[in-house]
Image 1: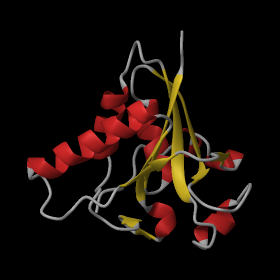
Image 2 (image 1 turned 90 degrees about the vertical axis):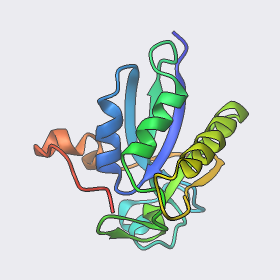
Image 3 (image 1 turned 120 degrees about the horizontal axis):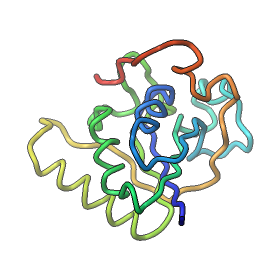
Length: 160
């Protein structure tokens, strides 16, 4: 099996991680931080907005079972990509909508899917999702991993 990695930011990472864990073909989903300038950031630091990092989820998947395009469909479904730097009650650059691509194929697929969604008329406002090259992904602290499972939460309101 050849695993691939995708990285998405769509608001609070607890709900995003949970949603991707439900997708058949996803091997693992890890909450963490990426897209900023601080090495090995902590949750407390990321929450200030000063690190430049987004709360994100690294998705390891089996492309023979689930395609990157399928993961993009999940990403678009689970949040509102027209909200700049916020999802639901969470506000700040750390909650931005972003796709961190790992190669040119992912970049092209992300751009194509964003354009198709914008052109669909589903949203009255412009999609503000950042599509940028992946950088170092820093795993969040252990208590953030599988947060819903550990705390008996079934879902969270990540739509705005």
